[in-house]
Image (cartoon, rainbow, N blue to C red; front, side):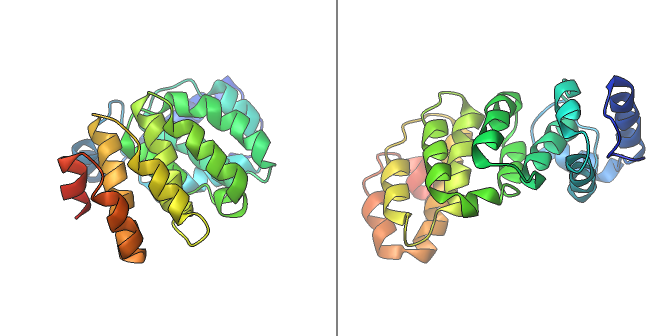
Length: 212
């Protein structure tokens, strides 16, 4: 299947059939246990990235417009596309602002963020964007912001800002707390003394214990 052609609704339906043919039953059962979301086909991540990379070289805007399905794999494909686009950061953010409303699992968040390498380059704008997402009340949007900080900002220039910001997050949501714990644990390995100062002041036993 050529993914660089015009991506009208008929082509989109072809893609759905193509994904069904890539289904891996063992992988599907594994995903159901860890991803915790509905509408999973069972296609491996490396296959989804290949498709996304091809679409990003062609009519990606029309694919995004037609991507109204809530299948886990199609949400991931769209997210991976954003990691491959060679467009200015501010243009990318316009897409991401709409995309993050589709997120319905921690797996989508973590996989997509890890592919958004532009955040390595656009540190100032990227940090500001992560701060905005962390203020959002929606679980997976907030987690998206935390994972951006985890993946791209745990270094000398930003570590103090990240720890101060994340240590002030108040949430009762499991997936948000786990993201904070993950960030704190990685930060502890890199910056033990700095991280301890903030970690001991987090008034949440779950985050403290999970981080350790």
